[in-house]
Length: 62
Image 1 (cartoon, helix red, strand yellow):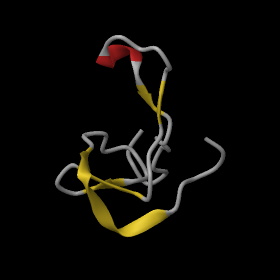
Image 2: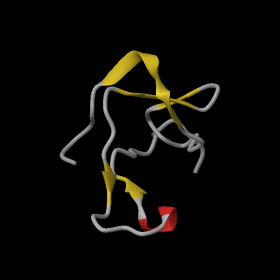
Image 3: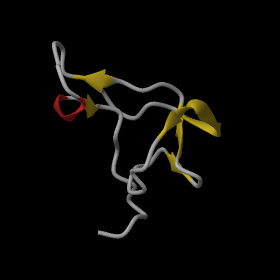
Image 4: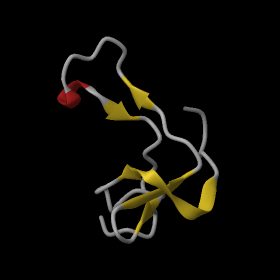
């Protein structure tokens, strides 16, 4: 993905996210990205997939 996806005011109720270091993470394990992109065409397991929308939150701890 090119650049950041717009961050919405409210979270997307259909997406559960546990990555609390992500820019789009919201309390309660929610995602505030307007849309997400999951990559790896032809993946056969969840381990072979990747959230391309992930952007490190600069305010999170290293």
